[in-house]
Length: 299
Image (cartoon, rainbow, N blue to C red):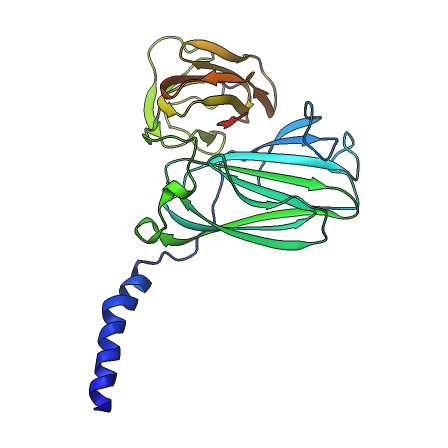
């Protein structure tokens, strides 16, 4: 009798538990190529225009009792980081180590809200990512005392084991179409492209890796995409080194076509109707550094 019971338990384990273990993906960190679009405010409410805009390689800072830069106060400042990450679909655990308040948005949906004054805390939340380009937004506020924040993210399961994605997705792509890229060996997008390719997200550091046929500097790229957007007021945000232009349905919404090191350009708020929209990003490089990160958010 006992032997039969043990045999039954082993059979159940093999049928139901073992497949779950086999399908579970090992924890893997989320990486970023060009970095995060970062905006810093000299107030605790992210109100008004940011005092500082730049590209941060990672959300990992320990400012202690000091200000992040000379333009910001040591207390009562806030930061927003935006990035479109390209990772396999599945369930992920996002963990923030922070002092003081933090928020996490995944594809425009608030999934973690700890915006109160507090000492050093560890906050975790699970989120189901669609893969192929998910927008992650991290908000941070320091009200007084020590200031620090670090983001870690790991894949926990494969997409087949994840919860229904409709729980997290409100105003996001529904078509998952990649970007079409065309490279030119000049800064004015002239002539025929020297190279074409596709990419699931628009987050690049071409100073580290680019097609072999493209010159090391003084080149340009045109990125095009037909994207489904839900109705809403949108703001397009581009981090770049050097110049950029952005068109939405043929309308020029960002025009920053000049050499400049690592800065962020933002469009005005755009009222967009539900449906497919044509998005074109034009970029040129001068010099050694070549970075581009394209994101948009609900305003």
